[in-house]
Amino acid sequence: MDHTVRGAASRHVLVGRPWIPLLRGFWVVTLGEITLLLPDMTLAMLAILFGIYALVDGTIALVSAYRAPSIGANLWLALIGVCGILAGLFALLWPGLSAQTLLYCIAVWAVVLGLCEIAGGIALFKVTSHEWFYFLGGWVAIIFGAMLIYQSDEGVVALVWHISSFAIVFGVLLIAAAYRLRKEFVDSDQSAFLSD
Image 1: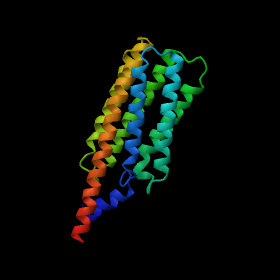
Image 2: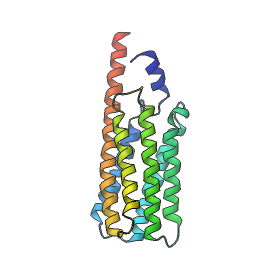
Image 3: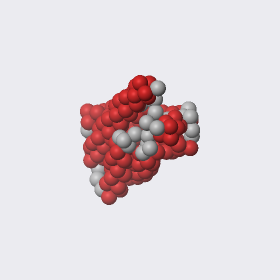
């Protein structure tokens, strides 16, 4: 890793902090598993579950971006945080939320999340050769959001299955990204130490 790449890496929040995508990945997989275990949940339960997930994930992302060495290089993570917090509060605090309204809330959140994850992959481009996990995760989120809008007339049970499938796939991609980031930067630190 040359000095230019090291300089870019030092500004990126995920460098040295692979626990961020790991924590987010485990959290979203947990959401997927809970929805799989409760396929007949009510709309109110689904709104509460999604609201708690989005609020916690958004808080993790926003705090991580705030504590980053350079907010500019990590603006994508801050946007994930803001969008997650707003979507979570909307789902939790909106009284009498209809299935259609919840579906559009989740769809918009997913599309914004996907665009931000792709932006995160672009930010990682000069830092790691494994940014494709973020690109792939971003496209998964965008496709999920578009699918929700396209199939907006389906019931709560179908929405639960869509959410659980997305959550598990997206979570596994985040966990894989965390593993690759940790492995790559541990290896590069050892190489830099041996070359000095």
